[in-house]
Length: 359
Ligand code: SF4
Ligand code: SF4
Image (cartoon, rainbow, N blue to C red):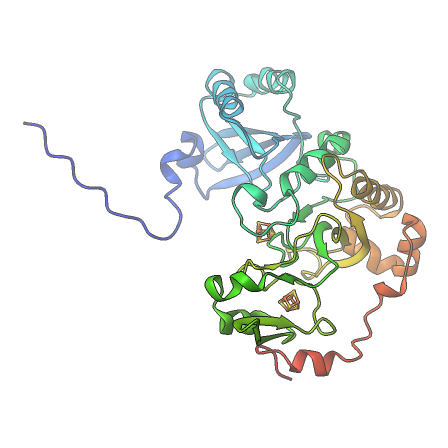
């Protein structure tokens, strides 16, 4: 008699074990790779100590995919790539083959189906982007839309490796920014304090939690029309939007006043130089779907100047560090305004007012 199926134990945290999903050559040589190279943009070639070899072909996707596209990619994997794929954190898809003869037909098939092959080395790889409207409850714009529109314009830079060093772009669809640091970052920028729907606050929001959330202590409990609600000191408010997630009646997303801003020079890695925060270089750009042309224009200006002026292997932030900010604004043609300067006047008082920061 067949053994009764054992109930599957719940897994409440952590990621699944990747080993069962690895290509057999990768599994066999896990942690025992001797050297690797990039024979062409979009292709990696790894050689193991055992002598085994594997080729990885990287292609761009639009990230948020319909089921037909996913099936198409799976069919390509079965027919041209030994049935194994993986996704990078930048939503590129990688196909793995253990025979060099399979690389070229795979590339041709991917390109014929509209998936560009590239994104490796000193290219502009796919933009790392946040969840957007599909999975998060607070976005002020559609992250995937900005990414798709921009990558359509940067297509040539994805399939070639012609930048001084790798370019990592990120987007963030709220101002709290789960997008991380990037050579170029495109982030939502709210320009007006939240509008409060007082009828809903008492039913929906835990007021002490919202008051504690504000980084500059701009929110106070208040009685409005006899009901417990909140009020915002608009002189203090820095329009960060942090009060909106715990209290949706503090509406901050706005079709006109929610804008996009571009930041540059951030870096997560500590290769060659320490990790850095990106800095604001263009603000107040309209949140203009479906193509966001104003944002694309700024990003292309920055990339053009970086490509022409940076030395080989300089990351965006290292290039700016060398030439200085005045030269950066000169070369990119972006206007430099007083809003780019933070002299921290008043910061001691405003930050000390926070529930979280004391110094
Ligand atoms: S960036 Fe903000 S809105 Fe976008 S997914 Fe992250 S937390 Fe949500
Ligand atoms: S949390 Fe941010 S947006 Fe909300 S009141 Fe405070 S500073 Fe303004």
